[in-house]
Amino acid sequence: MSRFASSFTFKRRVAFADTDAMGVVHHMNYLRYFEEARVAWLRELRLDHEHYPKAPLCLAVLETVCRHRAPARFEDELLVHMQVRRERLKIVIQYAIVRADQPDDAIALGQTKLVGVDKELRPVRMPDAFAAQLEKEKWTETWL
Amino acid sequence: MSRFASSFTFKRRVAFADTDAMGVVHHMNYLRYFEEARVAWLRELRLDHEHYPKAPLCLAVLETVCRHRAPARFEDELLVHMQVRRERLKIVIQYAIVRADQPDDAIALGQTKLVGVDKELRPVRMPDAFAAQLEKEKWTETWL
Amino acid sequence: MSRFASSFTFKRRVAFADTDAMGVVHHMNYLRYFEEARVAWLRELRLDHEHYPKAPLCLAVLETVCRHRAPARFEDELLVHMQVRRERLKIVIQYAIVRADQPDDAIALGQTKLVGVDKELRPVRMPDAFAAQLEKEKWTETWL
Amino acid sequence: MSRFASSFTFKRRVAFADTDAMGVVHHMNYLRYFEEARVAWLRELRLDHEHYPKAPLCLAVLETVCRHRAPARFEDELLVHMQVRRERLKIVIQYAIVRADQPDDAIALGQTKLVGVDKELRPVRMPDAFAAQLEKEKWTETWL
Image (cartoon, rainbow over all chains, first blue to last red; front, side):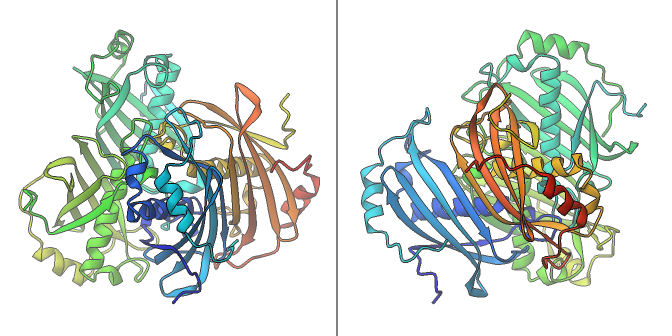
């Protein structure tokens, strides 16, 4: 078992389009991987019907942080571990990305803060189903 | 003068984020350069107030073609030459991309077909200002 | 069974990062989906050890075509059907993208032509394992 | 004059490809804008011949932070203000992005930490020309 005790893990191969001229994943794409992981987590929890496009709520990104420790390369199989907690109106998510063949060494650690917004991008109260789920999430330790 | 007699030329440096692990511009990004060129052309002609976001009309892409003859690399200065003609409801645009330091050698030749659509993505009649401009455009020769 | 008799089908959900302000997948990302599909096909056939990064051979894109018939949206589940044939040094691949819930209606049809190149981007002979596989591929009908 | 006293300001229009289904610039693309700004700054200072592709040095991204205060939309003209300082082997850059028509309101504030690396991605000493320039940079106040 990985040292990243995670409420959800998303598996993702590095696509060729994600690489840059240094031969590694361009740093922008870690934000893509974080987003794919949290969308998959919401779908897994059947919370996808609470947000866009199935409901008017959108999850706007307020803040992103990413710290890079090692590169990822084309065809690497990555695991994106996630832990989630609530901060009033905000959802705070931390991410630890490891290569599947070296599951204890994070190549990147990140955090995003999100807030639910309506179509005019005004913050709104979190749907009850979201709030209830966030109560249940475990936040083991701070990864960054 | 370049052999690409063009109604509009857009200048663009290759960004690092546009490259891939072969050390060259990833082929997806040529579609990005074509789009930037046609948006700049519409702005130059003051037709930008006829389309999204200043007007409801969007220009949906029906077809793209791109033929690659040579690579482009980080920091290359590119010129995107354009020629435009109308085909009933459609706008056909051809593109010839050259490096500024080798202006007669196309590194990529492309074509896009576009159609004006409303917010529900239904094709609509071209605004008169568009139609009038397309009458004036010169289509010198077919580039691909 | 789908009307697209395919040698390989790749499944892919639309990511939020792939959408644009029209609320649909931005046309650039179809080239991303085509690339992901052919990489997955090569891996499935265990031909991934014949190309970069496991071998020096890269598959350079010579030409792309994409025709759009209908949009795709965030969270749509897409199937990318592929058929492949050899044209001397080139590999020609056609793609038909459908939504999993409407498997007979292509939302996009595309084609790419690729050639094997070395690190200096010079065309090279196809590895025997590639050539042998391409002999076996069925090309049922031309999709575009 | 803007309240962001900046050593360098980069101008950039929002491209359509940068938007997402919320109708605003997708958060990933702020990292693209930061990168374009620092590449333009290095070129302006004629330091571009000290790094890839004109020299073997690459500037690897160690950390990114971005805080979002307001959205940007298609065709917005953005100004990316930068301030730069050295931290031993690292280059720390802060960014304040404003809309050209509202120059005192940051829509995003960010920071990147970079380190010079060789082709094997090992950290290397900063070239003298870089170090000399970083001595001259003014760091007015911390933006985030």
